[in-house]
Length: 222
Ligand SMILES: NC(=O)c1ccc[n+]([C@@H]2O[C@H](COP(=O)([O-])OP(=O)(O)OC[C@H]3O[C@@H](n4cnc5c(N)ncnc54)[C@H](OP(=O)(O)O)[C@@H]3O)[C@@H](O)[C@H]2O)c1
Image 1 (cartoon, rainbow, N blue to C red):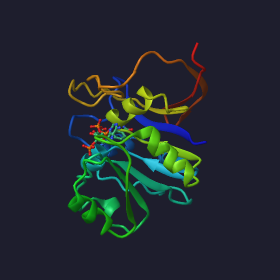
Image 2 (spheres, helix red, strand yellow):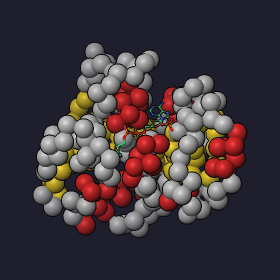
Image 3 (cartoon, protein in one colour):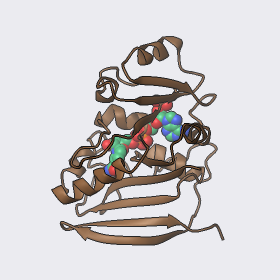
């Protein structure tokens, strides 16, 4: 059994980044050291951490545990075609990284990824990564807690397949004001997704350094 927790930083106007092409690292910088440590502590408590391929392209994240002492979780990147920038930080630091592709990924692309130290590629889906199958694969490898840090397309797919059991939101007290900045969930419907109403229970909330954090658990469907 795998527990999937999403962890996101959201502006007052519900944006995951200040602008369409800006990195969410700008939002992380609004945190105090204490809150950064709490957030990275959530990574350290997880066996694996996932972001979508576009987040790798836009943010170039490391997805390691810093700001606090703890083990690095396995990094998991769903990318149907596997076309991640080969210069990405997480493909070049030698730490374990699992790239999940679909059958449509070209052999040369897969070979270029697996040539990177610490990188493994698994095929998990026909034309796009099957997230439920990927979750099962991770569970079979002993992953009990997976933390997902976005972006909106990946979050929409996970909620649309009812795979999320816990939501953590850090409320950044700022308004982006940019209509093109990415929203928490995508505004464009994706085929095969049932992204309807779901009920959540607030389990905890607190304020650290002037920033609110809320934590929700999944209520059983009515
Ligand atoms: N504030 C925060 O907490 C936070 C956290 C993370 C990211 N962000 C921001 O979010 C933005 C990126 O979000 P995004 O929506 O463009 O991209 P995303 O969710 O990071 O990545 C989506 C991509 O993942 C791949 N993918 C493969 N299988 C998938 C599946 N079954 N469902 C969904 N995606 C799948 C696809 O790329 P392929 O074409 O390779 O298959 C897809 O285009 C950036 O601006 C970033 O800064 C914010």
